[in-house]
Length: 353
Ligand SMILES: C[S@@+](CC[C@H](N)C(=O)[O-])C[C@H]1O[C@@H](n2cnc3c(N)ncnc32)[C@H](O)[C@@H]1O
Figure 1 (cartoon, helix red, strand yellow):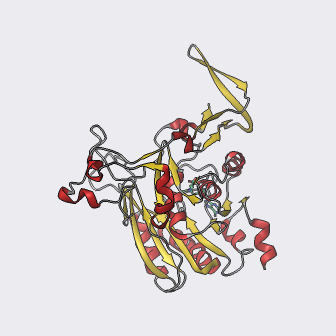
Figure 2 (figure 1 turned 135 degrees about the vertical axis):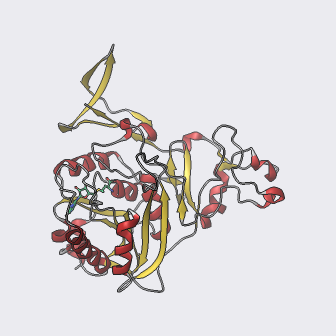
Figure 3 (figure 1 turned 90 degrees about the horizontal axis):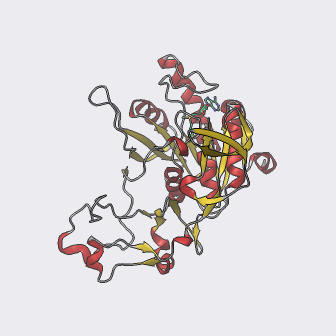
């Protein structure tokens, strides 16, 4: 049994998840996360995203059952989708797994067209067993006014008692944005931001735990798992997405760490920490003094060099295996072979069209 799963560890495997699940033993994975096609007619390269209503739900029930089967008794099951489909997922899951939370992710999009268009996604959090699930308290940075830098919430006379890093994470997430710029995107219609996965992984797993994503896309879950020192298994139908994932995973290292503690970095900040880690993390921060000045004084890293750097992966979508670096020449973009460069993580890849 152990041998079978070893074959899949730290791999993105091309194929239909329902077939590939058959090789994964019961109770062998610490966290399963699924971001399936939403049946919204999105333009995937290999998958037709427009099934009949009941056909879609029947298909979902099959892979959801597999997710529960392979998850360990201490493990967690996360399902990302629009609220409409999550209501059906929850009804189904309530029969044989345990509801923990419905996380509402306000991904900060501005839907246009008509009122009450979905502007948030849901992430259902279920556990395999009622008790004994691995789960950790998390904190995120205090929200501030973008221009003035003041705390958004008015804490009145209680500012002295605020946690220097930030509040505990609730079930509404408004601080994680969708990938906005094309230069940071893969050629995939619905790539998730890695710091969303970082948060789920820090919430429910430990170092070296196994995380499985049956709809891996361009490898967001695997990348986050690797950066956080976890093991990953990704299933993906599409050859191109598998290739992109592999290229990105080659340059990613288990370096989302401050000292001994795993943390989630995004741009020049830390987006999620574990509450219990603060005592050993605080030496890496300049904390406002006196504490009430936190109203306009951010808790900052002592040194920006603590933020890990990653090699840049640049690829031509028609020839993914070639690494190229675009060079601007007037308005023309020339393609030249690259020497790999180091840059900050926010600029980690460019798609050369
Ligand atoms: C919503 S996307 C996942 C995006 C991913 N979370 C990311 O950040 O890149 C769904 C993915 O599932 C893949 N897919 C669809 N049906 C599949 C199947 N039966 N088995 C495996 N992958 C499948 C699609 O090709 C698509 O890349």
